[in-house]
Image (cartoon, rainbow, N blue to C red; front, side, top):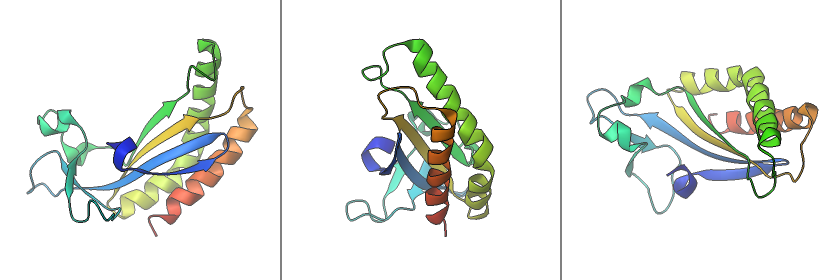
Length: 145
């Protein structure tokens, strides 16, 4: 669903796909969330984050403020060691910068589904990834304001 209904932008070496969502109040059916990103095709629609939520195994109100997915294509980075290296760098950069983002989404009573897709063709340094992450966090904070 994130890849079908989410919005995206690009900050080299990351393609960022995101979808802000708001949890339904406890009185609503479990597993449903309302999209905060109005679009012509889904204005006023209700969508389900995950089939597990719809099956009542996970409560929608227990979602973390930011759910993260990191993808490194095998086609571009052949060795698993290098893909894991890049994932660790992205995850660490996000960990260092996420606090303001989480604070702004929590204050607005929103959750964020977020995917990072690495688009570089070789390993990037932590400084390059961190510089991109600063721009990503700044852009994502602007959507809550």
